[in-house]
Length: 411
Image (cartoon, rainbow, N blue to C red; front, side, top):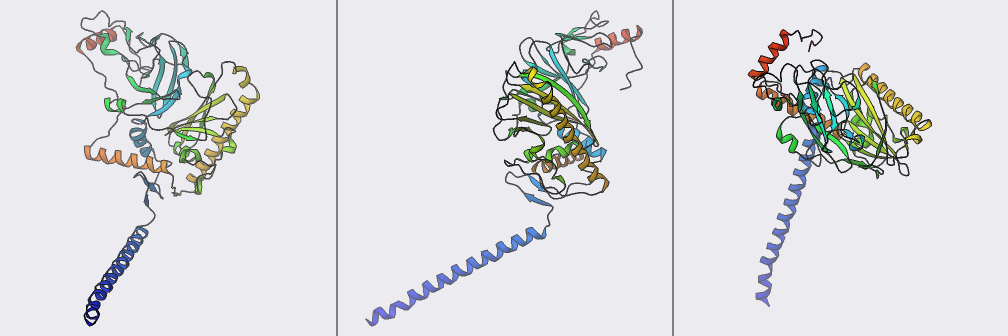
């Protein structure tokens, strides 16, 4: 027994030491984790990591709402290379149907071809950059520039070029309209990407944010009505609506942006396409509509409303009270944006904001500007290159000799 008693202390000591070591290790880890947390707090509220790696900013850059140079940077960093929802497939019924739009100074039009495909083109003639379409919408299988009579078909191909067709070496196929990447998603919404690179056209459409269960949207919808209004506010205010922050409940954004609730608009179910478009539907109703915001400047934004029906027989239903009420609601929404913008700019404040999309915009602009700094030039993905062949130059001299020029095209 004495031998058993003598062997016990070493086992006890080893166990005790192991427990002490484990205890000290846990205390050390706890202290260090606490220090890391303190360091994060000491770093201030400027940024906080999100689940998908993006940075949420609690303080927006100076001039976020008013700076013209920043707006130009947004044109290059956001609107020149982002998929933008601009229309719906059911808007185009027969070949030649077209609609013309302008977003952040970029003019373009969409047209249905004879092959039943909707294409988008920069709204500039290849000759002198005069607009090819002048109306907001229409239908024609041949689009003619009124300046010098150049004509294009629904696929953007040049079909007629007065004073050029007879010049040896002039190639019509090298003077088609500048095409814009265009895709249609599962709901039938048409999205464009102004970035001229091949990679941009091959990129996937971003996921569509859903609120509720949008219903009644399909390829067979009927276009009913469209109108545009101007608002004196910065386009970035629109990304602070509660549906655009991914909330599934009717909660408004905090702080200075607590201005919009779905009670202002009777539909409750929505689709959001970053950065400019929201679609509203209502359970039990065949009507739905699309709001697209088109920035003109830091201080002004166009608001376009396109109304559709899931049934062909609802055109008359929309007229009257429903139409009047919707127009009134859109005007009220614009007035709230204007009031918020007036508050932000008059108080000369730089408010905080924790929304995902505001951070997304800020990060995209920052990254683009940093790349421009590295390359020592402005990077304009949406710029199209006009190639002038020898035959083109020869024909152009002939055109000038025939006094085809005009002083009205200052640009």
